[in-house]
Length: 318
Ligand code: ASP
Ligand code: MG
Image (cartoon, rainbow, N blue to C red; front, side):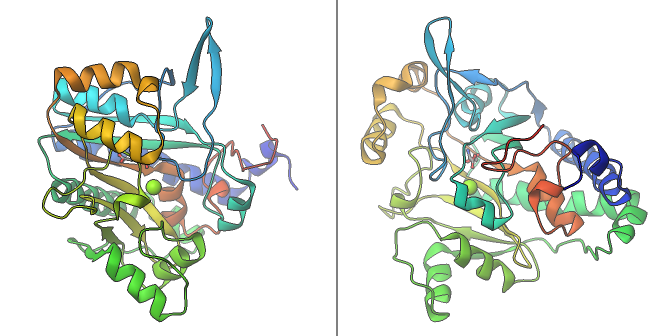
């Protein structure tokens, strides 16, 4: 294998990094044009995102206290949205992914996520922001980085808004009809996810996940118990999950009940539960992984080709 500093000098890698630079500007420009305010995310804190699907969090000793490195800043963006209403932050996340995720080609142990949160919005508002954000970003790349896309032999089109929406139940039925063994209520397994994604030529949403598949902060629909007002966005062509998002469970009582269901100890969530007890507005939002976005836009086989200094699960590297 090439040394990393040599890889960074390869013409294809330079094209990827130039495209990534334009992606970062486009994401920020779009959100600002929609009235979102950029905030600085925490990197460590007493709590972090528990809903990370089999990955482990990293704990550090912070002057004698147990602190986590952010697996995502979800709980903190709710705090900021209660003040500024529309916020976003771009920050690194650490998730010690199981070794077998290396086979998906789309997991990194360190990645950057653009987190978006909008007070008083519902999950349809959040999906509208997400799909227009993606379409705008593609438009910018086609305008300003056409040569680099050509060099990578990537044919990119601006996706058509609004994106198709499948319910989780519809997705599971489609997959079952193709021979996948999935039980209603589970997360969609990696191989099924890739297959589903390869059935589409445009990005699409899966909405309304079952309560048992997600962490405590995705809001349960009061009119449809057991169903969450949340979504994932999938890239087409087999690239799989792009975004997770939804409305937030935000009342103290509901969150404590959900924590009990997901096996979280409410005592671990000190400041967060105090904040909810005082009361915060409802909100909705999502997180989009920057390396996966770059991978899809550039048409790369592996997500670790979409970042200058990759941390591939299980591999010790710069
Ligand atoms: N916290 C979610 C994640 O990291 C994103 C979100 O719901 O905003 O997948
Ligand atoms: Mg997700």
